[in-house]
Image 1 (tube, rainbow, N blue to C red):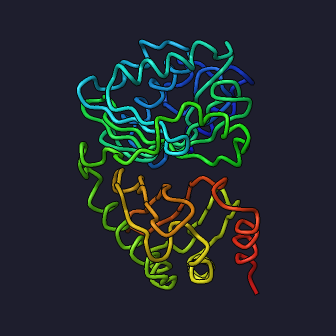
Image 2: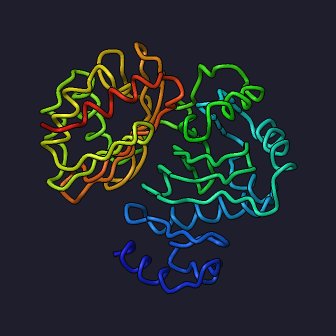
Length: 319
């Protein structure tokens, strides 16, 4: 309902006309011609995320920082390897970047899954904020009393540009070993935790058939770095069975780090001890029966060579 109403309303807006006043339904963003997909998010978290990124886009450092808890915070860029565990160090780092941002730079959400306890947020940092290209990231966010207590950002270095990603290495604080999930606990809805656990187990066991049983009839499987879009449980299950040795979030050595979200939208962070890609995220949209209607995987594609990506695509060819 939210999605349909929002799209109909936003389609009548003139280019560049999105404003705070227009965004009463929480589905458009100030200064960006984008419709935010909040169909699997509560109105509360959709509004919270929009305000959060509006302050960031306005280059209002104090306003942006006001969304973070002063008492408990973990903020990690999982690709760069930059981790911050207190409010002051995070502010100092973000201040460094913001002082060089272009005046028209934006950071805007495109899809939000979850509620005001925890959520998965798809967002875009436009070119100039962290390098010469855009970053399309997936943030795993935990909230407490509307304050962010934990945020882990995942993105694909190939989309950003491998050379651009390498330039950000100067800002690394060293490969983080503590991702702070124990500080916030597992607060995702039981339905989301159950599906995440069953899916992760099926993927770990290389059991594409069991994984397929978790998907709704018209389900969509997306892998962002591999540029894959597969529709329907049969095709999804067949692909997962054949690609088990290629996908970084499948096979032995994979595990669930942390689950977030509501009964209809969320996902989980995963780790992979036997892969060149050590971590990433799987976002999940569920229907009223608890079946997966959309799965979106995000990980750093720069950590694998071209041949792996070619193999992932080739494996999707149906006979």
